[in-house]
Length: 428
Image: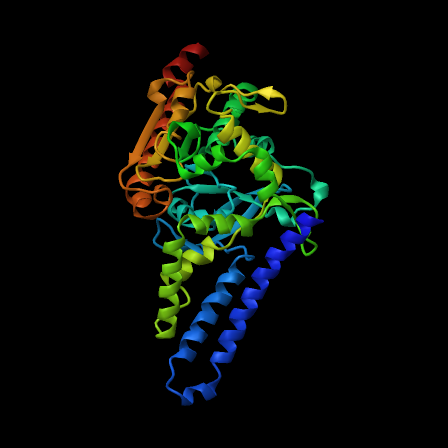
């Protein structure tokens, strides 16, 4: 009950701040205050508007907002979201572009389960969609999943990826961004041993903690400083009575958000101060840069306690992926079994979450993969988000990833096709 009370207390605080913002906005915007020239009322109204919106976003799942894609014919084609595999903890969702000839590139984008929704990859999706058929892993908020659905840890996450890859088939390219990178690598290794015909064409790992000890960051240092007992005591709570997942143990999104903000508190405080001042001057807008960023950044989701704790213990503390000692459902996963899935590593030179070297460690684990099937790219000046969003991704990384996909798709196509002369000889 203590854990549930703490969870509900956080929600009460969020709800109260949203109400205070709404009240301040409404009170300070009364027309009668227009009779005075005191700028205080403009500042109070601006503070209320920004505060109400910010705290409301924390419990709102963002929309994808990708309505159309321009086709080769120069026309806008409508985009529809279709759930092709529905699971309790996450779905496989397709972005179907209506009226467009199907693209040869088929991409599965593995979104991170690290506190934000899959919509964090909105700009990545928007950049891939014009040139590919695209699917994404859409993870659910743990607070909305009944306890009766059971547990969900990193082994379950890996099995979900295996199932999604099997469903899409062997002509698929997989891109894993950040947190799912080590588990996507493990899922590919599982397929190499259990269902070789279902392996993807290529695997691209972007800024993921394959070997967290390869380069220390504040994230890895935190994982080393705290014990699992301390982490469970401080971070894990039970979902309160308001949600369908009542009683489920989770790492709450609001607690995660507090941690995110504390890492760059000065920058966030300045951003909100500037936004309030802009609103008071009448220079704010609904879709300005501040709102576009924070509408997504503040929208957080709960993770199941077992997923969060197993990630910290098995990926960061024990380094099971880095040591090639990962086990799923009692069976060892040997990354060296991957022999035919071309793998590309993308890192950012200024990544302070998954520093250069952490993701690159995957290539050393792929002992059965020929060097010709391995590629790596270090993007100069790019931070963590810059390697999958923004100009560095659009102008430099995305073309390299597409070129890598096309090269190895063509290689595999040639390897599986027989020359016509051979077929003729066999018929004689």
